[in-house]
Length: 350
Ligand code: UDP
Image 1 (cartoon, rainbow, N blue to C red):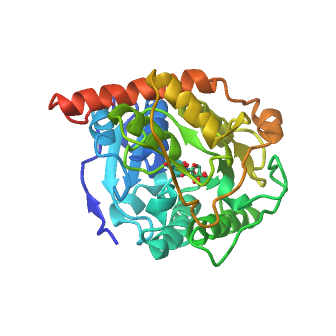
Image 2: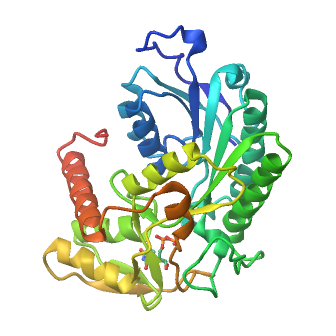
């Protein structure tokens, strides 16, 4: 596991409050795909952000863009380890904690399943303890994977799921289920105010091209002129939410005026097959592409679609970005990334 290291000093403030009074929002996993979008949104709202990340799966270029903001502080640490004393010492100033720290792509979280499980269970407990000592509100990003390979469709929050606890996805699925249990136990005991989001498939700019997700894989393959990989026959379904919509949902959930003692699905109910997604990507490429079929990964869910009634009612939230628009923006972003890489500019846009 990564040794905790403080990378940057505390930032200069741009507001007039004395430094010692300024409230901090912690984003664990803030250098990752969704985390970095969340940090940017928080900074845009004038929040001071303390980002904790072990950089296990973060896209390296996410950080410099964020670090340009004086209200952003980065601490490299692994939440599965005890939190660094420098972070614990900031407790009196911390008022919100978002936990997005865990590899989320199946090939990546399965690379070190023990670490995935510990990140979700032990890491979440470390952050909950910090929330308790700080008197901060804590938001866990859980996942649609808690529903496993669902036999109820679409998935509402009261569905208890169909997870294989002995399979290769269990380190993530069961880790998140245990993290939810812990979070609600802290909430029930009055040890912290809690929120739990169940995030469905999310896509958008700043996805890591090496993440192995279907959206990033197909777009990068199309741009490179490689074969497009479809796992299984492509009839399995997913529902893809554009990242700005997801971040708006996380912010709304954190600030919502309810007791937080129920999970909330955040995702886009627009369901499509992987083959239909392939069609969209080929249309964006503008010319035919070779498709190659690979074996379906073990325990790959057959279908997935969120019921977002609860999010609509509690948060007044629903996704706004249509798939065609979001995919076009994501495709254009990857295209520009590749152009920068080829011209020697490398990664670094934010
Ligand atoms: N998938 C695919 N080709 C790829 C990567 C993934 O067909 O290059 C499939 C994968 O088997 C799954 C779906 O696309 O059925 C979504 O996979 P992803 O890893 O993006 O998300 P998750 O399985 O976690 O929902």
